[in-house]
Image (cartoon, rainbow, N blue to C red; front, side):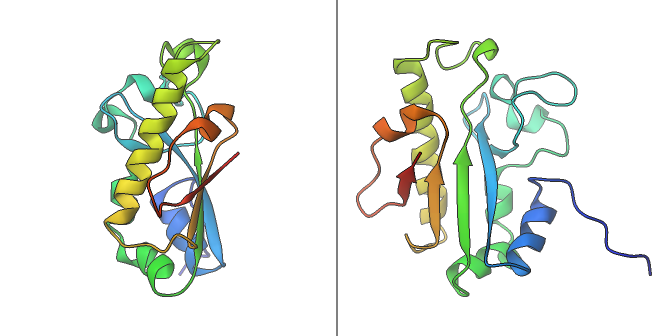
Length: 157
């Protein structure tokens, strides 16, 4: 048997490992062209594509959907039964992507961030996660203008 190999950052494998061997995990989500939340940190893929301009199933194999992560019982069990915690960072699109208002932002950027917040709430509602088990945050200042659902997760900047 060979030694353990560190999984690639922001993958299902790394998040399952992290949540099983710590108190919680932090991961990044982006919104694909077909409005699916995908696990990815960088604004551009290794083959120079903006995730927000691609359909989720056309992204490289190393980029998986949030729904795929939430389908893994070995991940969700830690949140719903064992008191673990998830910090979910919502990434705005790169201004050069042509999505969400470019460099200036404004209404389109707010709408983009609101869609992401709504999708996270919807996805986590399906697994009945406690509001104390996760927080949604972003370095994008428009996140503070989003409306959260009654009894939904905390949204922070």
